[in-house]
Length: 232
Image 1: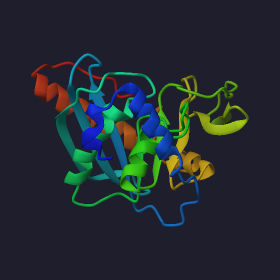
Image 2: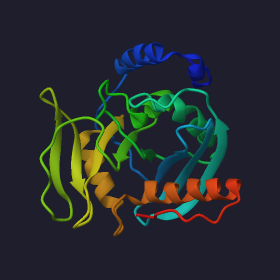
Image 3: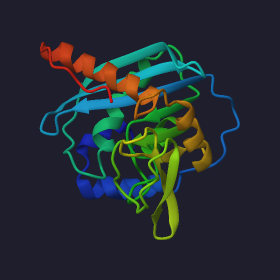
Image 4: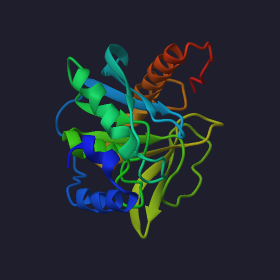
């Protein structure tokens, strides 16, 4: 199935497709070096068909921006928790196709396998592009965990039916944790270590922080307002 066909799916058909995709997930060690890391984010109003998507490219380990792309797209797929990838992936693919160079790994603002059917946005996008991906979310969607200690890089595993599906990571003291889970073609331990290496004093890692700035700048420019957005 092509992502362009997603908006023609019913929610039950989308869930069935997630079950098919789940069989293709590979959570495994990434052996290739990461010279360029990407960050992806989406901005939209749940009641609107307009979607703003952006991907930022950063040089590793310096975390300096070396490229970016953004698109304004449209979708009619409804806003449904657990199925947001069907709204987001087509727009992100448009941004992906506009990149002059592709990153060695992409961090997405959302879940990887920490999802009821293991198909968060990071896993879904990784499967569609066959690119190593990590989900770094600001809120928990799925999985139970103990609160990590109030220390930088304190961790707490997230469990679902006895399986570790992610890690709650305290990226900044006195802040809520972020939720890390591998998407595709990278291991759990590597996912956490990569995100730690991307923290630069903010709660969220630099790839998705910069992508967040990018897409909201595009959204503000499109709306013609001077509204300011949190940079975490």
